Length: 92
Image (cartoon, rainbow, N blue to C red):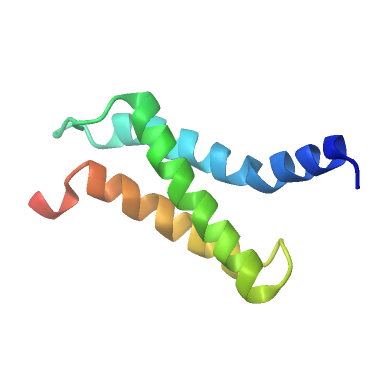
């Protein structure tokens, strides 16, 4: 595998994490109006992206292959949990 193919595979592996991170951060601003986040939008996207990417990486390591629904469910859980923590959801 040459470096360009490796780069494209990595981009395709991380694309769901980036998409979910962006959607969660943007929709959190619409649905959680009573509380403002201490983080800027780009920081929320970056933190959520890292959490989602780690979940996908752990799913790849655990299952030995990409694309398992359990990995995507873990990605969603980690992303939503990171948004909840950044919005200080426990203070509701």
